[in-house]
Image 1 (cartoon, rainbow, N blue to C red):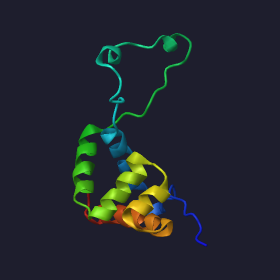
Image 2: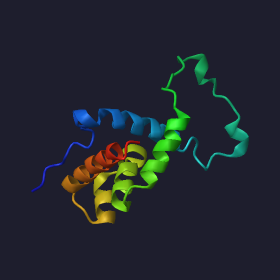
Image 3: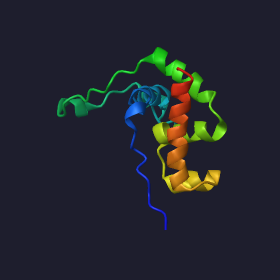
Image 4: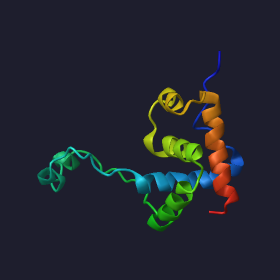
Length: 122
């Protein structure tokens, strides 16, 4: 029986690239669902009358573009794993089944992908 790895664990030497990948995930994230009618995209919710506005961290667009280029140049499995870990975030068993790897090796592939980005001095 295999144990489930902690996919949120980041080694100390990979914290800087993890922060840049978090920024990159905000840069590439889809902003609004495609099923929303264009007429409602411009509307503003009245919920702000009762709730405090939620401030989100700003996205560094230039660094996001640099990271997108660097992630794109990774080998296919590492690129898919990094995108899974930072952007898509669906169930790990689904990713593992699609790519034919185990959950333990998925954690290792994610760490290796971050290490490749560090070694490329992105």
